[in-house]
Image (cartoon, rainbow, N blue to C red):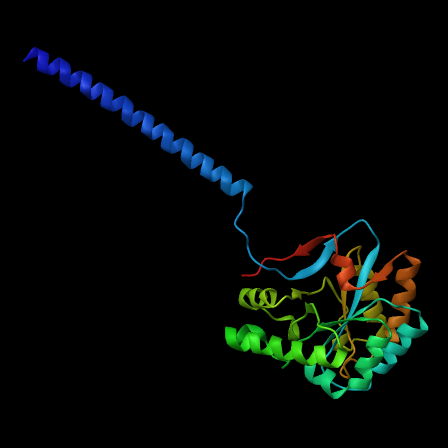
Length: 254
């Protein structure tokens, strides 16, 4: 009887140490996995680009066009008069298709062209098939009209969600937003447009302006904006040039 109790106590002691060792092993495994999550974070997926982190005094001047034929010409005239050769135009495909002469002038002046989608709707309200259809329609039309496949896209109304970003990325597009909104689309007055841009601009900035007919004061504010930024030492580049080799600034999408 005594022998049985001694053997049982030894067996219990051995089992206890085995369980303790397993407990510590599991703790180490968990900690290592936690560390792996820290050092190898889960990829959040494609994001929209708002600006870039850079020490260079470079900015990208961008123009959205979705309708009209009266404002684009005067804006191009200003850019030509100021000798500004680097800017990015985001064109909606129906507008580009119906205004080939203006598109040709933009292309001939050497400006970069990105997609502004097909229908001017909020893409986040579409299902995935509709999102893909809108992007692909614009892709086909813009490629035909400009002779070059666009690689950048800015969504109508700046509206998107994770699905839109993922589908655009799968189709070879970089999604472009902006850090400085000129608010020219509100027609607040030439001086307010100028002051808003000059107060907010920073190295690596993407500046949003418009060349649609609803924006009646952009061409009036533009000469002062260009001259003032040049006096501050800024260089104008395309969006593609701005983001090439730079650390882009993105925002989380819920």
